[in-house]
Amino acid sequence: MSPAPDAALITASYAADFERCRLLCETVDRHVTGASHHYLLVEHRDVALFQQLEGKRRTVIDERELLPSWLRDIPDPTSLFKRRIWLSLKAPPLRGWHVQQLRRMAIAESIEQETLVYVDSDVAFLRPFDCARFWLGGKLRLFRRDGVLLKPGHDNHRIWSANAAAVLGIAAPEISRHDYISTLIAWRRSSVRDMLARIEQVSGRHWVEAVSARRKFSECMIYGRFVDEVADGAGHYVGAEEFCRVHWTGTPLTDMQFEAFVAAMSPEQVAIGMQSFIGTDLGRIRRLVAA
Image (cartoon, rainbow, N blue to C red; front, side, top):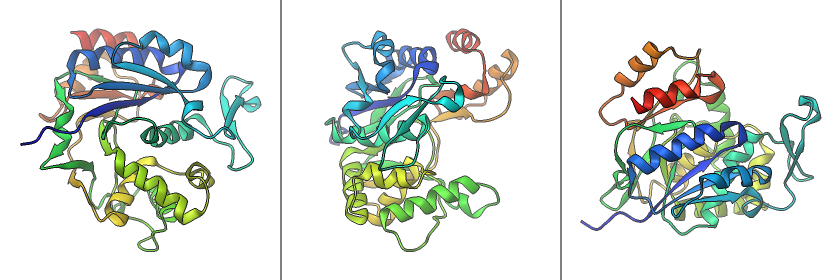
């Protein structure tokens, strides 16, 4: 069996998640193998802060090295200048979560590793994980939950799916049946580059401009629909198991609830994610992760 292609871990983050990202990096160094490098993608003003986390196998990349010069952030007056907003003459105003997605797509044009493993900064690894697990018989695992968008709810997912179809030039179906969104997933760098070229071919514009024009978008939906419906699944196989158990919504967990959450991890799960906006105390997470 030939070895899996080289992998890079990709994390888009920002200053408010710095300590969570520090914990991620510590647990990556402790548990993750099969990746030659870890790239932290941040906005320009956060570069110096995140450079504290750099090392031989970890590099901070300024978004200005990845995104067009016409897209720039400024303090947002509607938040009393506490938040940032990205403005240009080529796209509607964008928020940080939009631009983090653009960074995750753009990185494929700047690095050489074929396996791009995406992991959010509010994730912590608890068990050993080899990035080669994404490969099987020369094909990369595409995370896909089949039929999810046929079920009640998931309204935003359906919007993101429809906008993915539009930007990729998929006439039908407008909305896919499948969901492709998770963390600790992998993409092929070559497929991402093909996807960006497809978007530019369809739109006649730079891919950042085309994607941003539909403000409600999901990079995971775009990649998933590209692989399945444009590339006809080439170079991929499908898997629905989630390697990371995520607490997506709700209230902060107590110690007992956190311990129960970890205990409920399935055998294939190697990491946990505590969505930062929920507000679970980082000190508690760090203490319990180390326990």
